[in-house]
Each structure stands twice: as C-alpha cells, then as structure tokens.
Figure 1 (tube, rainbow, N blue to C red):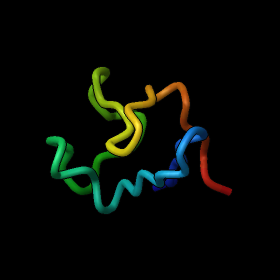
Figure 2 (figure 1 turned 120 degrees about the vertical axis):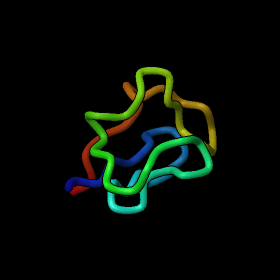
Figure 3 (figure 1 turned 180 degrees about the vertical axis):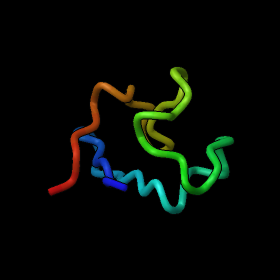
Length: 53
C-alpha cells in the first residue's frame, strides 16, 4: 500500500501502521480513511496529502 505525505507539515500516513490514536486500524489504505480524518499533526484535510514517491 502506498504512503501519503501531508503537503503542509510532512507527516507521512503509512497504511501498514494506520493511525490508531485517531481510530484508524493498521492496514487501512489512504483511500479508505474516514471522510472526517485529518492530519494528526497539523489538522490538514486529506486533500492536502500527496502520494509519497
């Protein structure tokens, strides 16, 4: 699964790790994140993320 990077703060969403502190289980693809999920560091929306090269 592809990692995604926040364009504003550099946080990397790793689908293998998920975001358990915010209710996202490990193994959750970026495309399957809840609509209200935001960057846990800066609060940016999912629209502010880009696929990691």
